[in-house]
Length: 626
Image (tube, rainbow, N blue to C red):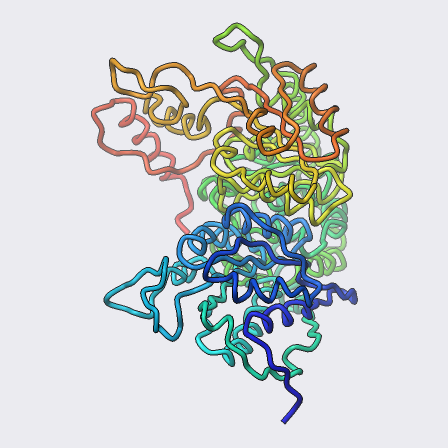
């Protein structure tokens, strides 16, 4: 028998978390930075007691909303390129369920976050305890079973000794580049306080070695053969390229073989915008340069991308009937998508090996890469200078594209980290944002979760305390969840929040209108007494005053000059600041050579809807089926 130490489950959890490290390419990194959460009756005397004792190097961050806590933890891990994480704790019932959306967001984006929701009593003696959900047909089913559908690993610790296998398996998944995402370990509130003699070996320093998956000779031979057989290959740079540190390898691969590449939301900013082979965003939210070449390409090299429907235009984009897919990914699930030839290996090592193999190869794109790139840059310049009509009150308004241009080209430091995640802003940014420093483009778009932005900016600031962190979001996303702005004030973490207020959910209003439905339920208007519909006056909100009520600096802008002044003041501020920017509706960018499939009604009393359904069916006929 080895040495043991008597600890409660809560104390053992923290001791274990504090001793987890990873090793990547010879560098050892402390993996768990701290804990985000909100105390409630199910956690405050268990894990809460252990945190209050302060016997670890883990810092506790007091969140204001459990979903916000999860988003902040995700923003922290994402900005750290998945090499550092946070744990997130909650009470049972509502507190736990508030985290489910954040868990789904982490899993969809392959970002490691450890969720530790409290649970109903394992002993069942006081059942039903406050906030417990009772399922008469299954007494083992609690609110935390909701996490099963959105977690890469799920467990429930019913006895103190189960904690050991639960946490070891949790970190197996958290440190796996292919399988990582949300990990949930439910902790019944009585079990959290139970004591057990834990082996010292279990609590000792543990180093998880994140090994690069080396491509085999056969994989490189097959990949090289496909590339050599192609005339017009195109690389899609996904988030896996960023997380594998493959930027230099991609630059060399593109330059050596005259192969252009396009960016997904996760891959954008891995290579800088002015690289001669970087075509910017691809797909439904992409630009004309990438989408024009994607339609001609006879080989798509999908590097580190999950090939979501926005990237592939719902499998419509690759219209060359001879086009094949080469999937380079550590996750076999993603490497096999769209009937690809799967290369299940590290992106950097694979690209480096191909550079050593493809001697003498050169694509047939010739001058077309430069032609479409120059054309797109002129379009971005035009969008950056676009004007907007005045508001209903006759006062000037900015266009959404102009705001992005002012921020990107003139007002923000080149190394400022830009954060967003929902609405039309990610579409605009994937198309037009020019990343000038690597690692400064921070976008959540796999789940497009409204409310990610402010909380994630806080997490990114904790990850990068010396950088300016700026989140750009719509009024809809801000009102959905902005409570971690108060946490930023409490922690004195300076983030700059830029709210583009167009008085509504205009991204969805655009989609609705494009399918023949006339503006319904998405514009922020008062209810008209005569019609009974939401078609009265536009609702006016002063978001600067809202920020001031939290203790942040509140600023306003309606013109380029006011925006420049507000950004200057926000950059000089010592704490969090919010800029309320009034923008004209419908001044976001439009689609460029793209398409997206949505479930348009096939039968309707509205002829415009039926026309849209017919057009939708015609485009569906042009898509790849798998």
